[in-house]
Length: 113
Image (cartoon, rainbow, N blue to C red; front, side, top):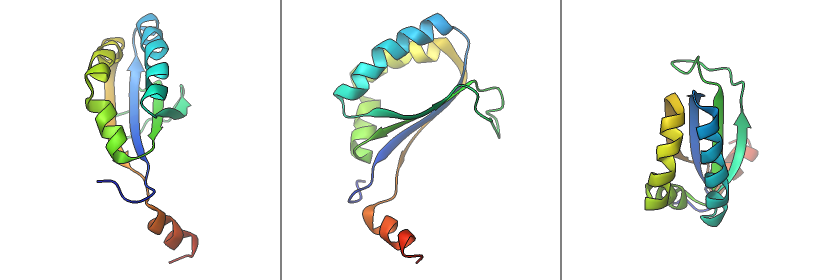
């Protein structure tokens, strides 16, 4: 699962329907992310949703040191509790955990191979 040098990512889109509840989620999840080695990599409150995400008013990418860390964080008991707030505060949400490029792939790409 963990390719050498490959980071793990959470990619999520959603339509926020309860801003107060979502703010509570953010206030709890950001410090928790730091504790488990993650960070918000990118965030957009006006994403250009395509293919079933047209009504999204939030897109977020969180980065982790590896795919293993990203999966373990998502599957943790702590995040299961935190995600209840996110799910209640949003609708039409998508959530994907994915692995980034490993060091060899980055090198091949940089060399044009």
